Length: 336
Image (cartoon, rainbow, N blue to C red; front, top):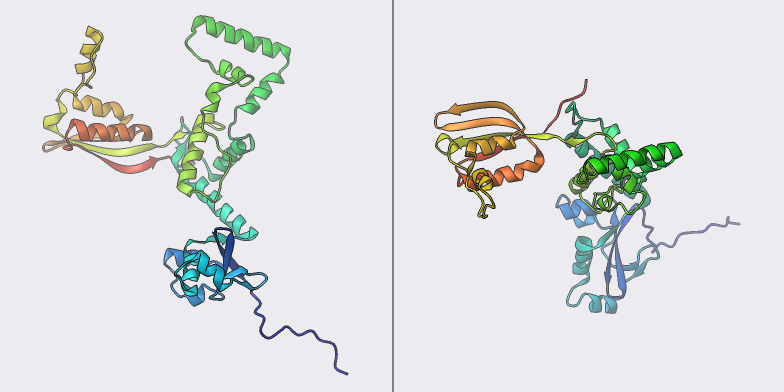
């Protein structure tokens, strides 16, 4: 007597190592079955062989159940297109369904890339040395765990100091307010977190890495949050520039903006300063300065936030005859 055996139907195709691409048209949802890690390569133009991308060149309603999309539905959803054209349309524009492992790996890769960008652009304000990737990652984790900012824990610590500490803090605030009513102190800022804290709302926040944005844009958001909340002392690394300008322009008076001065002092201030003085005012530290023939050249360090204003000044005030060249986007000093 032959032993009992369950045979898989010969016409049933078992899909393994599958990655789904879905597209919704109206109330209908369509799927195609692809090999893993091939859809992105196809869309980037690295893979052109559809046989290496598609497991089955067909459109499904449900791939896991093997339900093929009816022709009537496809004609209504994709009028005038053949089934092969529909497959290609879904492959190019559909939403890739990523598994949990792939999603975790992509998130980890994005996290590493964002942290590396941030670590290369921020420095310790005093020593101008870069922080390690681990320290930057820890600071960002601190921000994200505290809802995007690092002030809340400091305020809580202040409340836990007891009544005497609270009284001392209050007296310091009052004395500061009486001496200079227009100055906002750090003690007042910490105390304001107990109430509405309107200034804190405007500060950028960091809630963690996502796969929906590029690493560069997320790194910019992370840098803004770190600089705003200072979980560790950080500042943007300075840019190293070479600025060249014809010597005939250097002593020209800077053109004043089209505003009416309110006093004689303001009128005098408006006409004060040459093109050279204005350029050097943007440079925090001059590395070298020389005259080469008929051109003046200065190499120095500029804050990234001042670069746009400097470029606009160079192009407008000198009518394009001077130029600012970036030698290094972020000048840092490596630690010992």
